[in-house]
Length: 113
Length: 111
Image (cartoon, each protein chain N blue to C red):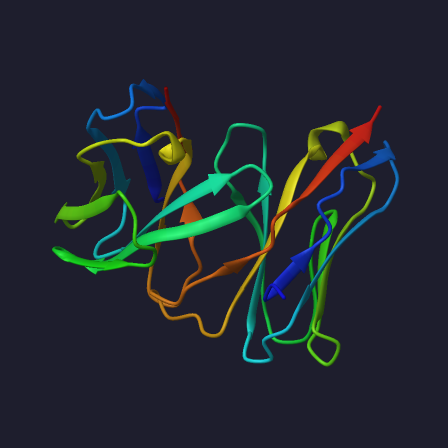
């Protein structure tokens, strides 16, 4: 069993819809949770960075962490065609500089105009 | 602000040839540096990380090596490329108490 599971998709939704992307994990030691967005042939770009359980909002993006269920989500409101990308979840036990990140395999999202 | 550069952006090399990929970071001092490989459908695989000049930790035994000759420079090398070395190579950096930020990547095709 992988430490982090992420549905690879692909996921297609119409423009303006709310998108929900999810990851589950097995290691209860994970404390820091990240979402990266990766456009085709580009490096991943950090979208959200959260600590422990709870919600964090940034514009149209909301990250949600439920440590009791070992489940994290990224919600995108009013989705735009420019949101079409692969979304990677990542997590770590600590925020020390050399702490390793464990990544999901990514969900490919397409927003249909 | 900090920026991270990788070059070349794309590289096509024959099997058995050497490899040198370079990564540099601007706007920060003493960053932690990382090399990842990304294969389709397999996520990101950490290859090497470095916490300082000359300090390299290897995560996966392989045909590759890494070096950090300067504080903000990280180099990925191979003496003889294999077909299986093809992939998208990503460099990342992190500062104290921060998560990792990625560069634009190098796409390597070994023929």
